[in-house]
Length: 275
Length: 139
Image (cartoon, rainbow over all chains, first blue to last red; front, side):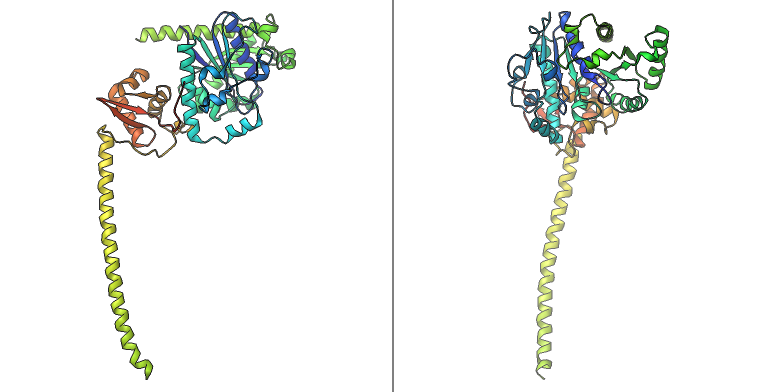
């Protein structure tokens, strides 16, 4: 029994968070696991574009509607597993990209946010208990915003995607200390878009970089992914795990997916021993 | 001459009026003192009710959203976070989740009630703590 919630977060935009979240979800679903992928980036929704090839009918209900109490959980989820030929289920909870919906989210009160986080927890319990989902992956908005903090609070594990940019690392250091440590959440850092010129692909160089970053950030580094021009240039509608399964980006992400699974196994064993 | 005759009459009238007004003010002050005594008594009763796990529910003083979790001390934050996940919980339920002792959880949850972060209600012999949200949570 897996049943874990993973939040994919970053301290700023453009780190590759959505590419990581969508492909991680597809990797698990290709393996036969049942996955739910929720777009919690309500200010800049993107999953509706990424999965546009697999969404056959007009979206009837958005995740916004569920959080507003206007529909049931199952109405806000779209199964795209058949469209992408996945072995397991891949359910999508999409954020509404209409400007009016984004404006509405921006005007929500703090009282609404209290209800929203409770609804998010209730959605996760429906996914695990009634829909046989193994992993719920949350694609969040960058930085400290209600949607991203709600995602962190409701997750079991957070994967923070970072690029090795010094300014970003400073922001990340603060975010990890003030947000993740405050909530005592299990957190790992994934370093993405590392330029090949830094030669981190050599194993000794990689270890050196990991050591330095772990010392600075005081959180484990789950993996390093080099910057691939073709990944950056790929169409928004391209799901690499399905379209280019042999791409080195995917190989790296598969290793990370396995590490995340084994971390989860270790947690479960620890929990059994504690009882 | 006319003015000299009218002056004593006006003073007498004014004094009478003043005495009347003072009586009225005195009456109002008495009511205010009485009201204040009632409020002090009610406040003491409410504080006692909060301490002894009775059916008292405090009015929220702050919005119990995730951002305000950050301003809570870590010990209280842990208890509050569990209540986002469980819609309502007894001190025993909280202790199971946080892996702390039940009396510790009871003390923390009651402190959060006094702060206005949580609400509590009695159902039979059980006391349930919960985060109040104006909208119903539906699956």
